[in-house]
Image (tube, rainbow, N blue to C red; front, side):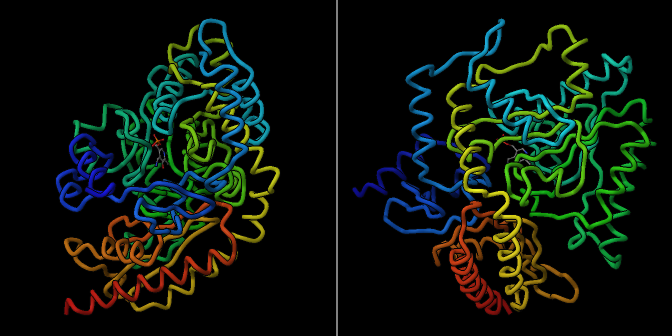
Amino acid sequence: MTDLTRLQQADKAHFIHPFTDSKSLGEKGTRVIERAEGVYIWDVQGKKLLDGMAGLWCVNVGYGRQSIVDAVSKQMQQLPYYNSFFQCTHPPAIELAKTIAELAPKHMNTVFFTGSGSESNDTNLRMVRRYWDLKGQPNKKTIISRHNAYHGSTVAGASLGGMSGMHEQGDLPIPKIVHIAQPYWYQEGGDLTPEAFGLQAAQALETEILALGEDNVAAFIAEPFQGAGGVIIPPSTYWPEIKRILAKYDILLILDEVISGFGRTGHWFAAEYFDLQPDLISIAKGMTSGYVPMGGVIIADRVADVIKQQCGEFTHGYTYSGHPVAAAAALENINIIKQEKLVEKVGAEIAPYFQQALQQLAEHPLVGEVRGLGLVGAIELVQNKAKRQRYPSNIGVGTWCRDACIAHGLVMRSVGDTMIISPPLVITKAQIDELIEKALLALNDTYTQCLALK
Ligand code: PMP
């Protein structure tokens, strides 16, 4: 029995994978990834793939960073674990909180640590409700989110998210979470211009606040651009209008930067890119570049002061909040980003090159739209460009394209028939050229398959 067969059999027998149809995976067999370096991963059979998704949007500094390995190893030897409950703390968590406060928007100077993006959003839900209790407005409980948002997989995370497939499993959302329209012009914009549609999508927030009563609304939660939903970038009119509405009704803004944080937009946080002043920012992923799990919430002074001064005990926390080994990994990861000026490089050089290169694909007969910002991008696969009309969803054109990418040595993810890309921040221009070349070959193969349908 080959090693691959043995691993696949054991995987099938003992391992339920996240967001996976176990039955069909068992029939197909898993791809077993064994090692990685820079922007490349290798499977157990030695096949090399350019990782166009940075793992799961997280390996910002690329694979194989010895200095993170060393920092983690040193911390494990010195203090592998201690908590930050019961009047205790430890140097890595303190240093990390201070470092993140320095990088965050000026009005945000405090961090609550979690183990993941989902836990960050659970924390947000509890913190905003507690905040309004302490402000003497205990009815301000409802959180407004958006359809097709992704905010995690815990009960609160999946409820805050707007994925109908997730809501169907487990009787979600939980009470006092509602969802409004998403700013997805390509799919839902109809005959409106992107600008008019962006305004309309934002005004759905005001309509919902008025329907619920402003005294009942605690917060609006949103990703700056939707990631898992399909790299959906709001039209330019969207965020300014959302800002106006939130200010008018004194509603908190929870900005979920689990994907966008730590450099992906060419800024440390997308709050800067979109000129937003959030009250809470969810972080994870790029915080440690995925080397060790960690997440957190960055808290604006307005909220932090109330929680610190008036809350008494904030009855919330995780065993691994501020885990010393994860904090050591995060500190070294941030150090690399600073030393190598990755944020500046992405902003000034790599992201513009990437976006321009990506636009070459817009000419392809299968491609309806190419969009992106910073180091994320999306490619819409369509049957009719002019009508923005997709192939019937049961065909699975996006899955064809994803498989064709793999065949050509590229990891690109499909969300329905939208192909999405989010490479490590360390990707070079030559590697971007390689990515586009491989994507083009995959699009050609997919198009050939599509033509055979007719
Ligand atoms: N928020 C956003 C915007 C995400 O993209 C994700 C993960 N893809 C999460 C939250 C959840 O993070 P985690 O998987 O670490 O719980």
